[in-house]
Image 1 (cartoon, rainbow, N blue to C red):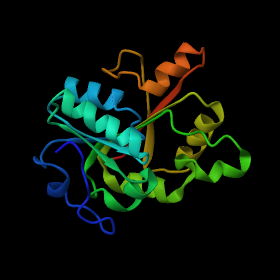
Image 2: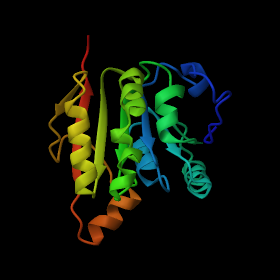
Image 3: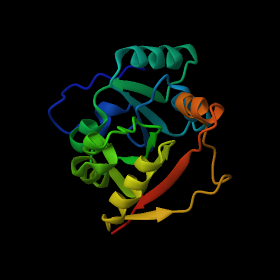
Length: 197
């Protein structure tokens, strides 16, 4: 089923509710847009399960259609707020990688607390849902958002920064990233790993 509707929005999900095969590594893309990145990753890594998260209904529908059209069995999309999903709903120690790619930068100073990377609920949830050794990957065209992320993660000893060379692994561009690159903007990226105990 390419559209995932949680059986309950008010408790932590169990892995078997999320996946047909709970032994597969889970990767989550927050704010999956039109599903370009999600579908490309799911095609390239059939041994992993991909969950796209989006709050806008039109984008959820578009991603759902793209998954169905490409007959991709290892990808799903769900409609829920990203911070809430990570903070409260995803199973503990279930996610191998979580991707946040070209998020809304909330550029006004008075809106800075709305940035996911500034929210304690999100950062605490991220540490809970990632498997030990799991990764959080961020790309943004917004320099201030990027600097906020670096500052936030510097205060969280459970995360360690990782190098991210260009040829590290297959990583397609999102629809938003492609748009910003074509308009001449720079993309900033960073990668962190949850330390194993």
